[in-house]
Image (cartoon, rainbow, N blue to C red; front, top):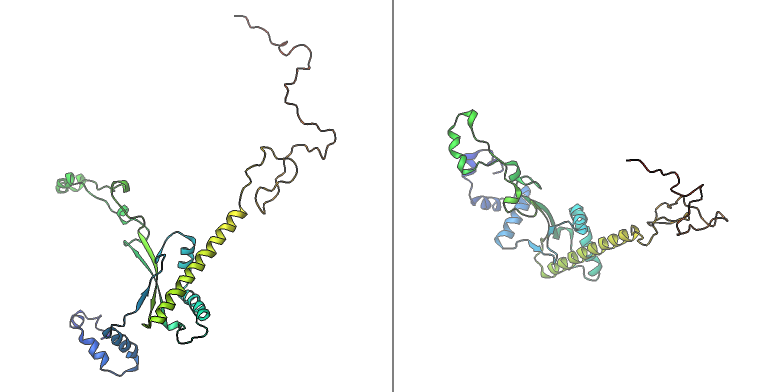
Length: 262
């Protein structure tokens, strides 16, 4: 059966009778297959756990962090919350075997790229020119993206959670623990963003020319020092006057200006 895919003629002969052949054997290497077939025939299908925030991965920081985590890490976080909630009831505590984490990507064949950008199209009015000689064939052109409707993203990433157990108590527990894990992840990333914005918050009421004394523009930034004189350092310093200064040189200000002859 496993080698039928190599021979097309044999593969075409395979039917659902393969399931009966697997169920009628007692070989140890087919034990997991027999369990799956029995679940399938008993309609004990794996249950999918849905989150209130959906399973699509967007541009939010907590979503990117969730995507970058390994499947084992996500299961560990869920089990940690399950052990805390069900410390007094071991029967309802989730086991590692009960949880399935699936990370998948759906795209149009070129991941995040638009496949239409790599194609060239020939207008209908130029199709008759395809009968011309090779030197006079028409040129296919790329279609501008503004001329057609396209999706917001060409690749969708998802993180889905399934339960192998069909016990309603475990299904409810898994949904709660996963939702708590998502909530903690969102709160942690929100706190990190808030701390980041406070650390790099600018001071808007600084003067145009800061004094020579140290002024911190950002938290943790080096001091900004100007070359302006400081009254604390020079006793004879006086603030500049706003009045217009009179010309103190010999003669008037326009004494050296001579009238040019026409």
